[in-house]
Image 1 (cartoon, rainbow, N blue to C red):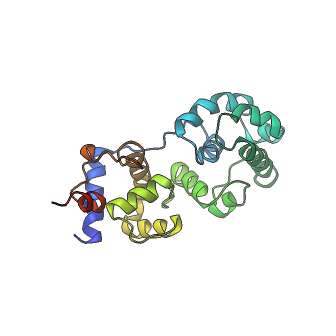
Image 2: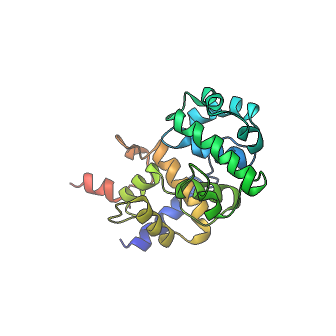
Image 3: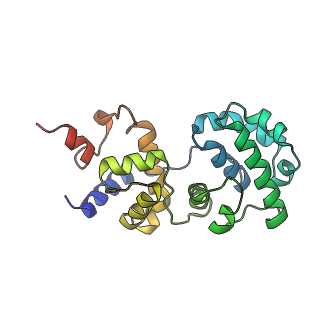
Length: 214
């Protein structure tokens, strides 16, 4: 099977099995999404969604959060992984949004990455979710699933995986394909014990076929 044929089969499968894939983070506006994505680094969306309601009630805008102390924000997010660093990032990026962008989350990818605590993946997630930007954010789930299925080949870094996936998927499908791979990795293609018996892609999956040869 060629790589092109594998992509075609993956697209065909997810288009039916997961036609409305979207972010599982709860948010009501660009600022809330940006904060949630920053908090989600090395943390589950479920934990983030349990934490953000009280945080957003206290600090509903970048302007409000920019006036908070790091210690105050920390109290709201202390159940999240790396709360000290994330509290610092949230206060700092809120100040930057107010001072440089008039209180509005910037849509330009480079402007987003200029914010403290916002790297390439976070900027790509925000861009894809909010504005349908044709990019492929690569987290641990996407990195793992792409390699296992065979959508990426010998990709040693998230950026290398990103480049291969952006080449393999039609550009207009990239925003939803990102969610396909994340959700598949979160619920089926688990890191330690993938649920291959529940997967509809075993026919084309390199990992499955390499481990189930007669």
